[in-house]
Length: 467
Image 1 (spheres, helix red, strand yellow):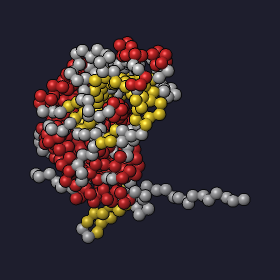
Image 2: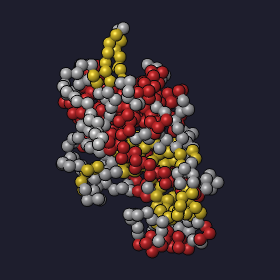
Image 3: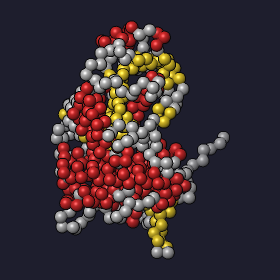
Image 4: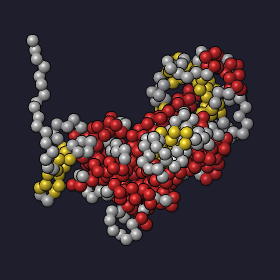
């Protein structure tokens, strides 16, 4: 009989010296300095430090963003950075961080957004100087030209009374923020915090978020670069699409791909469509999608009031188990999804336009990951504090995206935050001193030690903004 080998016996104590955890998160803090985010935040929040004493408000804001990117959920989680001063330096206390968030009024919030745009321009310049620049978004096995912006709203449950929290359409209670992510890199460009009962298809909110997102894009890319705006049917309001078209008069080359409801005119058009006009749909890798077809309904559905050149396209496919089907879908035996686009004829097949629109679903993953980076839990009873928290959560998502774009390659360059934290950010290390230098020594047996060391080396080599 073979016995199972037991683990080595351990004696556990709390008297370790020179040992740190989450050492990889220093990468995020240094990247904030390298991209100028720390400096930009300091300039934006300078008025919150009138006597010039204590912790710099900009540094406190960066530390909160680093903590959120590392997976922290509450301001009290700053203790993880604060208690490891040899790695992270002096970190503000929890009350100091609370006072900072409480002091961020609408003017300071606008300054924070401008600071993020300044740091983003530096990060994109660094990407251009050290690599091939901002990567292209992909769909159907092809690169998409220019930039792709995805807008979507999400529900965040509140478990206590908070200002402007309200019942949601899913019978919950909380907030209903509207967000915009850049599909090329996963950066969180913009977001607004809204009551839980805010409308999903409010054109004014979509315009506000889109304009804020465009303001985040550096001038060299905002003008002259094709920018595709994707949204679900909530972004299909005529006023929003008219605003998108009007942006072209300002030199912003926008186009759209937005969902459209399956109305009765759409149902009649689908039923009248000859079978030979349906074409096989594509998977995201460019292969054929089994059991799915696409067709164009332009000219068969009245699109009066929509921008000139708007086209309407439908996809049908066999429903997967558990899919929510309408009576029309049940009657036809197929699930139907419809979208609008103003991409002209000749700039991609119907199959390509459909798989390009379907890639909008990636924003659901961005939001899901964002909810582990501060978006899933708002700490205060006060709405303006939660607005500031949202902005720092977006900055945390940016730090993770910039880390992947500038410092990582291979699998980790596209990994979700959970994997980054497990493999890199939460790495333990030992601090040693010698030769007038402070050394962070990662375990020689850590499986991802080389990836982390290479990331720090690339960080050191990044060109710094002029001061």
